[in-house]
Length: 382
Length: 133
Image (tube, each protein chain N blue to C red):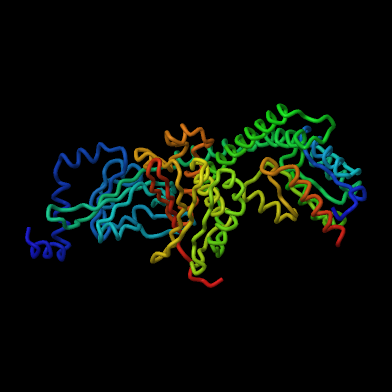
């Protein structure tokens, strides 16, 4: 189709709507849409409803066709996590052809007052000439899934707290024995076995803490307390804390972040946790020898990207896509017999996402890994 | 240590007998001779009223009356509200820590995450503050 014809169509909403209706009037399309268990709604670019499948009518408790030509907001009011009613954020789908995949940050309120959590995806409907005619919104009620998730998290939380008590007892008694507070000297074999027991107990405590963190993150029960932060200083503090661990592996930690790097607005404790995780991984997965771990940062248009670059064992390319998944550990990490639960990177990424940032990783097996994370920077002066 | 430990009394409120025992033993090793032990919230509150210790080590998950309730009662009592409270708990969520601090706890230690050395350092630090005030 010629550009002139395409422009003509874009400037004529009635022609677009007519095309949508033509597609929908095809019996096969309707049969397919009505057999889907998820709600399917077809909207034009003005977000007026043109079609709802059977599931959409059931989920929204609406009478067939009663919402035709009405706005999606009239069918389902979108409620954000603060409980405020907001507009459906679908303009970018209509204008730029963006897609939204499984967005689960909202609830909806129906005409009869019923409120439930939803997950929705939205995608543009392109005509043969590429014109955006409207969009499909596919959604489902996820209230039960969220409740199950909450119950699971509560269970993990209670169990983890209960596990901490015997772990504390073991920790403090072994410390007392190693401090040799009560008489007889321990021999080298006894000390070595107690130290190993202590390390194992510490590993268990770390795992309990990681599980608790995952449970909190997944149930949305984690609070972020942002403040103005200088990550160059935060990295320096973390390096100081980890310098003995690094020295034991004959590894140098080198912070190259410029003094002029802007401050970011973030939760100090949580970002510190992320930094410690990245540095600890960089050290753990670098074979002993004279190696350097470099820390750097670069300012982009609206965020600062930080990185931690090591000269370690790297990650096989097939594993990179899975590295932020829960409990995932790459084959060479397991082969290296380095201790780890596979939760650290998952937690770190979730924390960065909570700050509207992002994490990515570049790695070459046997050459090293660079982990990048970005945080939106804050223009406020300290 | 800038204080004479034998001059100070400490109450350990802990329902887990092993932890209570090791805390009391270690405090004794550090030179504290007046150590009171309570294993539930009601008993703790009574002993704190009777003995008015210089420092309270308080667990949060306790039978009969939990640590938050004990804290609330303490801070509503003019005679007891100034006794410093060190929370030693395995509840470690942000909202638990915030709530305890809002109720007047001076320090909060998640037991499994801290060594006994750190606990003793906090005890000493808090009593040094008492000595200065």
